[in-house]
Figure 1 (cartoon, rainbow, N blue to C red):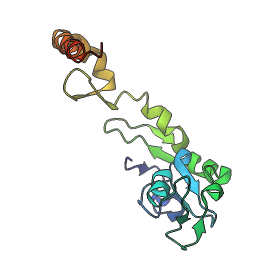
Figure 2: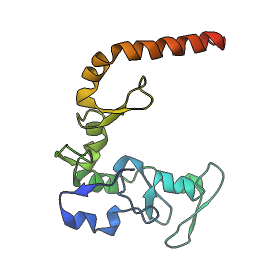
Figure 3: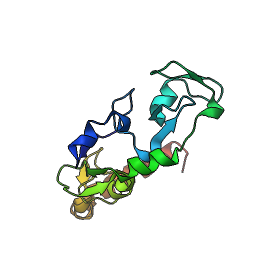
Figure 4: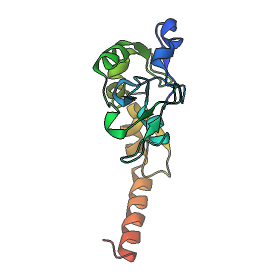
Length: 157
């Protein structure tokens, strides 16, 4: 995940808002609670063995949680985490936003770097993407035609 800068510096020091495993912010929509009530990122729960069949041992208290007892949404924690104000993590964007709306903002942020599929993974700011496509149309078209030829050659077209 991305490293967040908090509007209120006290929030960055609040251990209740940070995953004890990866030390990243507990994003509201990606936080899970074990049966012991300790919360972690969904990715960290998966890393700890949170599969359909295996129990997960809590890194903080070592209590074992069965998969059916792991909660994907603690409404109280979700509401608290969602209300924390952070800055957009994109370099030139200075917007302050609630953590619960961050993912939606990033998907539309003009300062989010997006990959151009025609430029060998070149990243372009979203606000410049249309201009980038227009200015490089000839090169993009050639790349597209090469991709089509490759598909034909492999009989997948």
